[in-house]
Length: 357
Length: 253
Image (cartoon, rainbow over all chains, first blue to last red; front, side, top):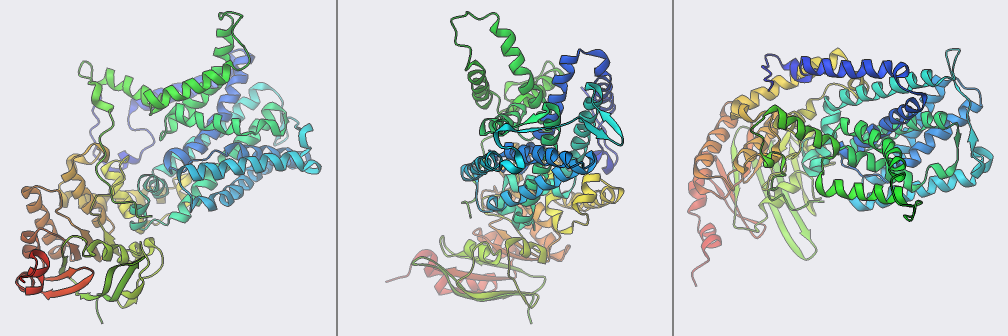
């Protein structure tokens, strides 16, 4: 077991709390950097998706896990990012600018969607964002002159400062760099006043406002940042797939994104990345498993069924998700042999003030 | 000219008049307590001062300026509060709860925070130092890194007081600081209220039922019944006031 003797306030706001973390995260980064030389082209392509979904997952985690605002419409922000990128690339705008525009435009749309969030809560907010998803899907289907409607849009390879990132490796490094940057930005945010204001809003709105936190402002900021990250993810997604069309940004996609957050573990950035990896690897696992299943089993809906079952199982048995499970395993070994089953049990919550609003 | 004053404050919820033309003023540096039987409108007055409900009539003046806007404007003016039934940020540590209390002293903006510039680092350390002073005062060092969700009721009550103090308020509203506490904890609470008044120089406006605590710490007491003021004065005067005795015990026929 590790005991950290703290002698300085700066220790608590450091990126890494102790040498062990530096070592393990360093090792992870080295492995990720070396990945193109270690794994096959197929696995590398899956790593692209994991990076892209991690960025989106991080954005959604900030909104759902840290600010406590549910969104069933994040596929719409993904679409906004993807189509902005496709259109600007088509117009010959350099990648750095088009990516920034994708993020900014998504953020603006996020602010507009965030406005009802100032009045709506819980299931009502979920329905509002759900409606937003449907509206965006409908717009990109019908506005054929701009989006190409159902025939979709094709994208060319990215050109960055004169280099064409046509190879798998170069695109992988771009995705990885953006994932690491998004992680760092969110870590920074969460250890400063804005991040704490988000957490305050999540846990008690009335008390947050009595501490001087402007609810409207921070909820809007949270929506904007979340949408911006999702927009960046959308732009990368568009390049990864090379072809975008409305059926990639349906409600099912939104639910898959929420699944990332729930399976990964609500309220942890690790969870967003773990959840993204899980969501990408699951279909592969299912298709491998299919080989062993009897042929009489219907093949078509298997994936949705498994997804649904896993989601339900997580909500019932491991509400803190994959990251929560990891914490338990780590604690078990940390305090071995003194681990008690009740260590992580949720405490009874005490009576709270009658809901004031 | 007054430090804090409430003039003719009233609120009506449908047909119920919860607070009816209440006026009082609090002098800087005193402990002013509102007492009254259940349903007298004490907490409602706090919620009106916090602008959580809009008042039907009357106004609230703080340092000769009207208190208006949204709840967060009240906090920005330097009025902090605690809640009767504890409204802490459950899934954050005690330290984070107190740091959230420092929100009104925030000096950095979103962009600086995203990049975590040296300025943000310095600001965070300064905030931490301020929070540590509160932790020292209230003996919370042992719980600094624990999640609020696992802590006992008595400790949460103290953390709520700490969070209010972390905002460095000029006026603090305490809604039943001793409710749910055992006699020892109530005794500690009395000490801290005295400390807040004498050492930190913060004015205290509180709602309280425990008459021992009230007479020990209060400079002046206001008694309410059914939304109206029935008596005001020193703790002794109010306790022996016939209208107050009648409100609590019922009148003789």
